[in-house]
Image 1: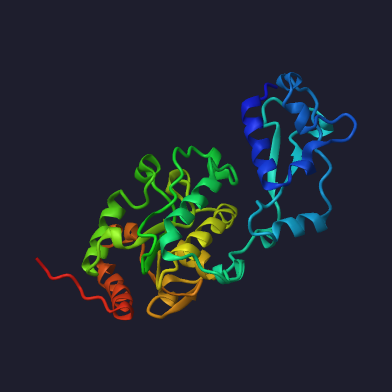
Image 2: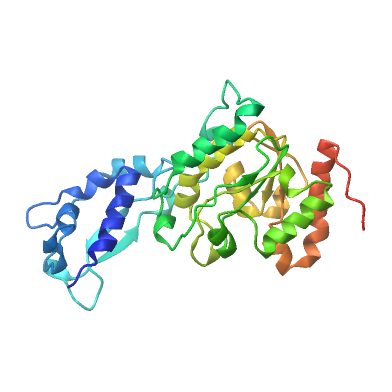
Length: 311
């Protein structure tokens, strides 16, 4: 059975970035290791057996770390150790749902910095975070058709930070958050608050586009959270606006309905946080725009902002 060596190289790079590459590098006698699969002999592999699984304690310990993907148990596709060409080389079965990393509140991910970044140094500090991200391959989204990492943009000294779910097609092409139809609506919402887009900071839970604009998987969101947390600690907003349930879930570390989270203040990284509808949802159900405006009015009252005059 032919093996796509290029895809295997990408997968091994992904495992190495996660720090679990060593678990699968060596197999038992009669086993093709991942390292061997990278060689020329991998092209026409005839017999492959599953590499020994790590102990249950190891699986549990690794999956409890928010920045590490849940391990997959790899089993032979056919009996007696022989490969059936009609089925995939391996079948991957996810570990128990109870072991999948759960959202952790941003306040619990790391303590607030004892020394805060000075206003004049914030742009440089954000640039350093972007440089450290590099051409990121830390989670599966790097191999799912991503074109551009969407870091975030806006005023590094903004009083308001808007956090969405993840980039869409327009954002993936431009490298900027919220530039499609949902972004145009967000611009209108910001304008109605008496502000311009240049006066706020905008980012997402994940910085790479999920395939088909689906919600980020826990491993993807948890892996990317460290960088959003650092951005928040640099910008130091007075108010954070969580746009939609995905943003609320990972910022607050709770999985609750949007209706139960809206209409009241929460805390996140030293800022007040309010939950409202994602602009993409408002495009699908314009009837909820009035409810979203109530959430934004909470922010305006907190910051002493006045609504823009109707033209």
